Length: 267
Image (cartoon, rainbow, N blue to C red):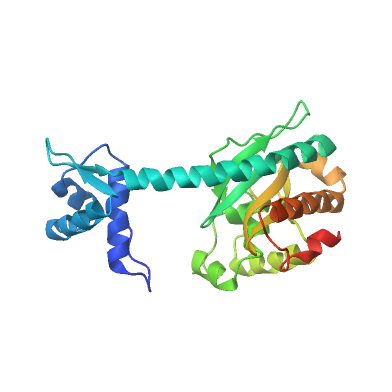
């Protein structure tokens, strides 16, 4: 069971622990849930009753065990619908960028300190980069993640990376492992309008990415991924501005007014 972070509401953490325990199994009894979450049985029973009243869990009449309710499925369906709508709007941009560069293009969304790949158009080269749609990666190691985080509030960065002096996870010799270096990179990203991953996530692979905004908030990104040898021989600035233009057009299609990122439209 995860320990509640400072400032969190303990009952919310406990309810989420219960939902996560049920999500990892078809059905569980009260005692089993209590054992898996580290809660006492009486607290577990009280949380289950509240979640059942709201439709987030249901109890089988035959054996009394609990499972996730239809409300959870309904929320998941809403997320899937929104992601599908985003992918439908973004797909023409991914294809256009791929046509212009011959490289693999990706659409990702931010999920806390990770990015999730929600769509991809494979490149045209024999040697090309593939990241399975639905997979995730540490945001601080990717161009997409840094492109989004660079435009998020400083308070969120402090929340995601609370240990300013604690090293971030290193995946390659080039991974940025301090919050200070990340913040410095964010300044460069905001200034030029795009982010670069120089073998920070995987040896031999580099990426360029630009953020997508909705309601003034950066929540997604479009990126190009390719072997480093092709990225370094390309005009990185030209790639970044190409991505920025498409990301700006996609943001507009999502109803964003662009006030927080007019620089993309000017390039």
